[in-house]
Length: 264
Image (cartoon, rainbow, N blue to C red; front, side, top):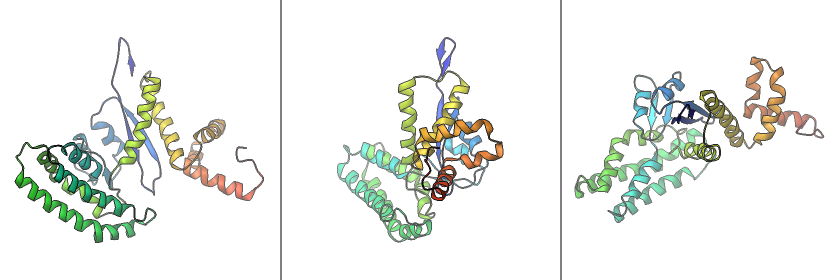
């Protein structure tokens, strides 16, 4: 962010809602401290799936939020240690690949169906992996790179197992990482935000465009319609302009008037 005489590092966070809350929301903060997500999630009481950043410990402390871990992060640490212990890495990655294969068996499954599948097939794999980790740890020196990866796994084992108890919890948050690439691309293109207001505006626009893409909407068409109508809208009208609701209303309107131009 531009400041007089120098630039300041600021942060953009992304929150990807579940199927019941189908929105991708970006939030702008002046630092990477826990205060930003803690304030954003102050009324939240379900599951937070995130990486192992220590700041999240303060976000979930003393409230009803359940912290879930991401398997992609553990997989990355195992691959980083592969050169030091190739056989262990290959066996571990193979088991993780099997976990992901279970997740892909039925992408349209309900949370209840996915939970049953995980308990029947994923839970035994995790029990096997945990046992292997214990055996391998006994064979490795404490500072061995693979021992460090296993230490990470055990240190976050409860979080990594949350998805076994809740069919609505993804196995990782790769969707969030993919959405953050939009911010990285914009940072390369525009280089800066001019001030705090500019950062918050960027977060709002990123939220709208990202959510449009999530619902297979053309962001330009949606924003054009929104900006044309916005001056005449009341606050109570705004929920109808959430991208998913707007898309549903468009479908209903077009079904009632088949010959109508979808952009009118």
